[in-house]
Length: 220
Image (cartoon, rainbow, N blue to C red; front, side, top):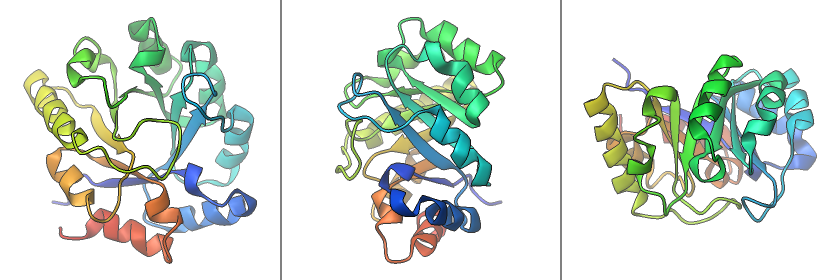
């Protein structure tokens, strides 16, 4: 039986002048999702794009959209991002004052609910919401910019979260974002992750489609 190994290339690292071509490459590749980082310049020190761009991406992308909100008060915009095409809609524990309500609202609005934690946040902080989520995203870099180096302690956090999932009989997926590459992909999968977000590793490689295959299948 094939293990659950999924790759979500991060559009943050794509060439935005050639955006349609980059998305066409993802469509024809073995990628499983397209990861979209939404930044507001407040929660993180960068600004990217909002739901009008996601609506356009959704018109040409054939992969489910994995939308990661790195914004304050994400509950204000749940419906807009879901209407734009979000399959997974992930919010940060650190940015949502009423996290239980926010995650419930995402599910009620028709999307898969995700929660993310920054590198300094222990996985134990998630214990009260694990029954409300379809995905937990472990940030393995400090969010805000692509191209950062993997924070090694993230591997232990993935293992801890995987154990919490098993003990609680939960069914959420574990996703990892930040510094993912060909050298650490298998370590992350072996630790318990199912979805790897890869930005520079994919879009800056000589053969992005081949890199996706290597990330996903090498050493099976």
